[in-house]
Length: 370
Ligand SMILES: Cc1ncc(COP(=O)(O)O)c(C=O)c1O
Image (tube, rainbow, N blue to C red; front, side):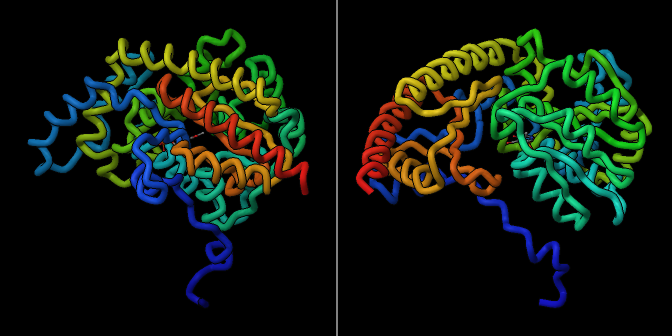
């Protein structure tokens, strides 16, 4: 259709993971483990639920553009208000970054099979989108720094990375940063920051602030608030000032802001979520490896499995689904032979391991008899 630019025509719409209800209905199951979207299996932070409920009586008023949350974050992280932005999830802020900083001739650079949300947003801007292959499922920061051209405007790095779960270290980032010109904006997407922060090699980007780095974080993961859409970012005031011009003035919503502020203070929930995740990562990684599968060691709340082929990945996905376990096939990311499994409750993880054992054994059997 001539009304649609070719780069929009070429996009594939974002495919959400399967819902619990649709799987329940399709297979007539009672117990479902949804391990497809890196959500918190404990539910939302209880403090956030209370704050959400309290915020409802103010819904007749327009939101404040995230001002109160920005104030709280500035205090918590010892920054100026001018260095903080809040938005409708970190994807909302990525969308604003793309609209604010990219011109038609600019290029975006990142790794192959980067976080799908970023891929879609960047490609929808119609600019050149360039990638560098992974190195052992890690960002190849050396190759990325060498791939920067005079047209490169944004380099996108997720740490930990989705879908691989891997991190780059502080040392690797420092080396990379030395080779990046100041005219290049680095997006450091730390959606899984809380899960990785205790790894001594992890470069918590709050420990150093560079003028051309924007850090993004979210309440969607460890705080269990993916459904309300609330995230935040830190950057030089000049970057934030311009982002605020472009951002929809009433984003984030009043309930989302209230939930974010309350969740930030819910240290007990954070602690419980971290403990459950550490146990889940350990149990899933061990169990998948014991089956003989290739598991990528993870610093996030999910693990990636590399399978022999796209057919094997599809077969295992379908078979696990039929046993009530929803995992994430990674074809949409550009890795058709891989699947990603989020950590769940202990019960979810057990169901998942049992379903994987059965599916993997059948699948290996199937590929040997062909
Ligand atoms: C690397 C990464 N960044 C951002 C997001 C999106 O976060 P939000 O829900 O805050 O938009 C995700 C969600 O899966 C993610 O994996």
